[in-house]
Every structure is written in C-alpha cells, then in structure tokens.
Image (cartoon, rainbow, N blue to C red):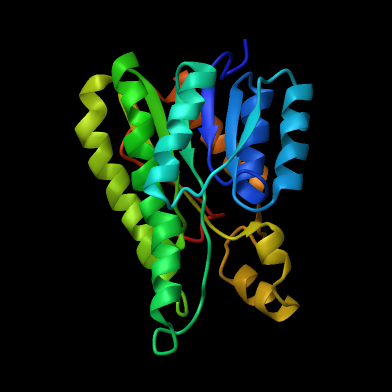
Length: 248
C-alpha cells in the first residue's frame, strides 16, 4: 500500500521547485493533490495533467496565499471538490533580498505577507476540516535561514523564523485533536532560484556544507511524505532540517 493512499493533500505554490516536487511525490504515494499557483498557469496545468496521469485526482487552483480572503475561498473550494483536507503543505514563498540599510518597506512587507501571513491564512481555514475529522497533518516549509539568519535576507529570515514559532504554537494548540504540525527547513536546494547564482557563489555555499553538494527538491519532498503519512503519527511541533549537515 502506498504511504499516502487516498489522502487529500493541499500544497501551496506547487507550480515549480520544492512545491512541485512535493506535489509529484504525494501523487506517487497515492494522494489526491490540490495545489495552488499564482502566475505560472501553463506550468500549473502541465503539472495537473502529469499528476492525473499518475492516477491522482489532481486540480490546480489560482490563489494568492498571502490574501486572507483568497485563502478562505481556496479552502472552501477544495472542501467542495474533495470533501476533506488530510494534509496541508504551506510552501508558497518569495525572496526580496537586500541589505537592511537598503531594504524598503515594500520588500519587507511582500516577503512577510507571502512567507508568513500565508501560513496563518491557509492553516486557519484548512484546519477547520481537520478539527472535524480529528486528524490531519500540517507541514510548513521554512528554511535553514530561519534558524541561522543570513546577511542580506533579514526579511526572509524573519519570515521563516516566524514560521517555526508558528508551527510550534499550533502543534500545542491542536495536538489534543489528533492534528500534527511540523516544519521542514531546507538548506541550499537546486531549484530555478539557485540555478541563477554565479559559480563563485555556489562554490562559497558548497564550502559551508559538510556533504559538499546542494540538495535536490525530491529529498525535501521525501521528508514531506514522511510527515504527511501515518509513519509520523507521534511527530509534532518539530523542525526537520534537510541541509546536508549545514546546520548542526
């Protein structure tokens, strides 16, 4: 039997990168995957067809996770289509890097809204279904930067640290109802974002990673499968780092 057989999963920001890898691995493990995108409609539709070919009852929804109203409408639409939500993956995120002295208010607000407020929005609306079911798994994608900080990413680090604190608090609030809430902190993962980095920057990054390589998106997705499955029924309030021993 597949690890997520028959489970209904909602994954935000899944049209590319880590989100796409999670949606794909979930479908491979038998989940029916609802997922969101914001601007990459072509990529979202391609993923939807790919997941359907695996046997998943997949559907793409255009939604801005940073909007409270759109998150509420999304949760309502998913529940109308699937009747329940078993696993929520809060993955949507952006960067607007700059040194703090040069960072403007818009760069700060955009990152905090997309990376942190979105986690509040979706968790609040999706957990109502889980509370009725008295079971469910919430998985928040944070970052190793949320644990270590990083020069030029004060906004990003603040948002990702906030996700960790949010995760621990929610786990304590809803644990008695059979709902788990955990975070995954990826290190440097090969994605479209890291592909744009220069060779000198990549070399500097690799020097700080004991395993001497960047991670793959599917390696993060495998941890998400574990947290979404019944193999992790007594794991909650935790932050699992996927970073090649970069944070220790």
